[in-house]
Image 1 (cartoon, helix red, strand yellow):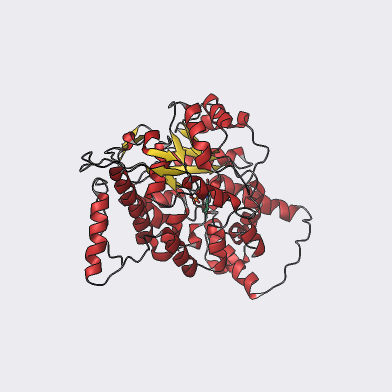
Image 2: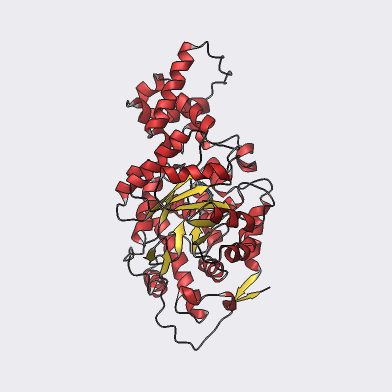
Amino acid sequence: MSNVAPLDPAAARGISRRTQSDIYRAGISGTRPRVSVDPVALEHAARRALSAEAFAYIAGGAGAERTMAANRAAFERHQVWPRPLRDVSTRDLATDFLGMRRPTPLLLAPLGVMEMAHKEADLAVARAAASLGVPYTLSNQASFPMEQVRDAAPDGARLFQLYWSASDELNASLLRRAEASGCQAIVITLDTHLLGWRTRDLDLAYLPFTRGLGIAQYTSDPVFQELVRGRVRRGRDAAAPAAPKVRVTPKTVKAGVTIARKGSALTGAGVRESLRSPLPRAAVETFLDVFSTPALTWDDLAKAREWTSLPIILKGIVHPDDAARALDAGADGVWVSNHGGRQIDRSVPTLDALPAVVERVGGRVPVVFDSGVRGGADVAIALALGATVVALGRPYAYGLAIAGEEGVREVVRNTLAELDITLGLAGCTSIAELGRDSLRAV
Ligand code: FNR
């Protein structure tokens, strides 16, 4: 158990004082935070807690990881002006987002395959986020079906992130389920129409989806299930080309068992029976076939409007012209992201792109920001540059790896606490007061 009591969800006010007080009080009896408050130590601790494959997948980026470095370096170019003597004894982190007043300007970014970090994966993340009043963007590549995630934290605000698959029927079905399971918005991720050149994963020859991990939204979907059954039927009918020979090693056997276990959603049977069924393997193959759609264009996006009445946010916008295009396409929000440097090596860092996007959007829709946020001061800088809300990514996965639900809660709470302190030390009492004049460009 952690040394810190869960927070009252409504009580974002005074979060920094309570967090510091809890930590220092526990220290009197010799207890130190289980999840480090220092972002670098946090990542190191997660590395120790994770398998080599899981750490590579979560921490890694594209190519020589220069975008990841650039995302961080962009923050170095902004400094917060300290402004004393302004009575900041009461500070309010509340922020309007998607037609609602939220306790804080923080959001959790969609992270797929969190079962690699902890067996409770998205269920743990959803509970932690809900306990802090922070909306959770549930990934299309999550480890649990969205309905189960809703049941784990029914009061938590959730958004559903869609990867536009090659099957429109499947896209429509996923969005229907998202709406029916109480998601407040759809986030369509646009920057992954090709899987990035992920050096760490390639060197380990490891992609979790090929093991049946991170495809729970698909295997629980009736349209996807029909695609899989159709594939198996066709395989039986036609003289299927011989599968490439795979060397049988302990790893192959383990992968086979994992695929069967994950595929039991399709077979409706246990692992033993699922091992004999062609469905789990066909599910992985079907997923790999439908997952990405490099042919997607702006015109296709209009279809999403027919599939859902929820607000639609476009994630992966970096160029200001694309922000303008998103508005023309009727998007209800723009999410500035380069996928945490996982797609292009030497991409434009998102913090550098943010001001131009904000200017182009001109307050017509909210602007979400992510990529490289590692603490509350980073959140403050992105807000000062015009982001409406800021999304946290890898750090919460590290908390999850180290201490499950409690670990996520601590990482998110610490981020909010540091934001609250930064706000006050910058002489502001509300998020709206953070602006360009709170910063000095370096
Ligand atoms: C991601 N990201 C992501 N984005 C998305 O739209 N759908 C997804 O399923 C995933 N999955 C995913 C897994 C992992 C392990 C990582 C690290 C990232 C991208 C994510 O939403 C966000 O854009 C980045 O994490 C932001 O970068 P930082 O701040 O984590 O470096």
